[in-house]
Length: 475
Image (cartoon, rainbow, N blue to C red; front, side, top):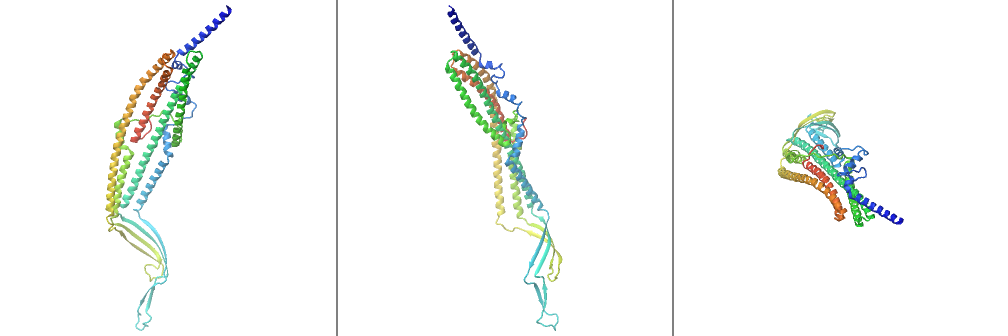
């Protein structure tokens, strides 16, 4: 009788233990995770919690605008364009100074094996006819030092056109710098948002992995108590391994973006503030800004201006080129060869150069420039058309994503309810365990999809501003 009571006691303890395990399993994983503190699974945006926790320990972050400025300062192509613009400025200054007078100093030494002389008949009738009078001029050793002043009087507008050409080239290069700076900013922004998207995906998988870990512990306890099949435990572990493999793929992609970002600006993406938002305009404002302010359109206009200046230079070359020249010399002998001493003398005059015939080369060059101008005009029109079409396509994508975001809010709410229902059905063995895990994974994927769409909208805004080359910082 005594042994029977002991056996009944053991049986009662075993039943109580099973009931406790069953009671523990009744509560859903998500429900238990809500009131938990540190060990609970992350909420809908787990990466936000992680960021808020790490802000305290991390050093002060910089803005994305500052990173863009630093990237533009260290960019080799941009610095080379800056040097090229300085070179065009120097060329324009050099051409302008050609309008001013120039002073040249000269110094000459000339040796002659013979000197100039003049033989005259004798002046006296009684003189010896064989001995004529000989007048010698110059020296065998001749020296001449002088200063020459040259002042262009008329160039047909050639110098002015050349100076304007280099100023236009300088302006076009400065505009190219603006265009390249916009390209650098766009690349850095897209890398930044791509990094945030992958990081959000990583945090979503980590949250899913944490839920699977808690679920795996419960299933293991139930299997040990013979209240669940071991297949459920194996399926849970397989899903955890799949998530771990996906995390490694994401980490590999994150590493590649980190190094690309750091190479561009000198900072790691984690050192940048996460609160960046791209400016936005509506479609009509974007098209108007594109037509009026895009650097490429200004470059086309500068190219047309340069072709017009080249025509003026060609036309000016066919006009007389007139310059005045004045020189002062000090030499031995001077202008008077027969005066054998050092003397000063001066000369002055006009120098005229005129192209008389060149087989109509100038006309052919002008015709070629006219053809080049027509090509640039057509390229400009094509650029405008393609830019407007690209803007319409991007704005349409942006509207579609905004509408999809509204649907995802409803999907996320229904998916959360689906997880609770399927968990209860799986507990009662009315639903395959894999279906429950699939619903749990779908719930996390929908949370990630919402975050991804928000970042994709930001990326589209970046692309829109890149198409129109919108200046300015974020809002």
